[in-house]
Image 1 (tube, one colour):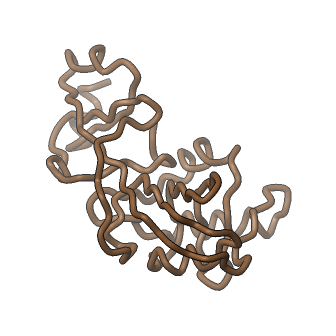
Image 2: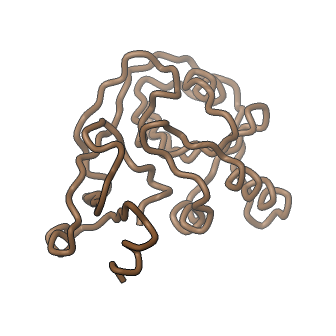
Length: 187
């Protein structure tokens, strides 16, 4: 399989709980980072709705945005991964903001926003996303490189997503940068 892939791809990536198994095949560990920022917002308006996968219009909207999305980051971002996105995110709520034409993969716990991915044709500032959340947000944790969110001073901290390790074989352009592969693209 590796001979086949080497002829077609410059880089192979995977995520695993057992990185030692893959090192003998030329894969190496890449350090990932989670990004955190303190945020002081009062309750916003209710600008998101949960997509309904039983509704043909919502399915069409999801497919349209997945087919036309831009990468969530210029450091590490993915496109054209519709099947993987649906496998990873299809059992979770997906939040749609109609006025932004944006799907957010997110969870809110108390006053903490966990942002895992954004599917849109244009990435908007973090402030615009938070303004559409109908509760107070005091801290934001971002699980992808946040440079396009225009959010100011965000701290980066080494992090193993769900205890998995990201590994690469071949050239990896973002090696040495602070980044995280979005949850929706992990395999």
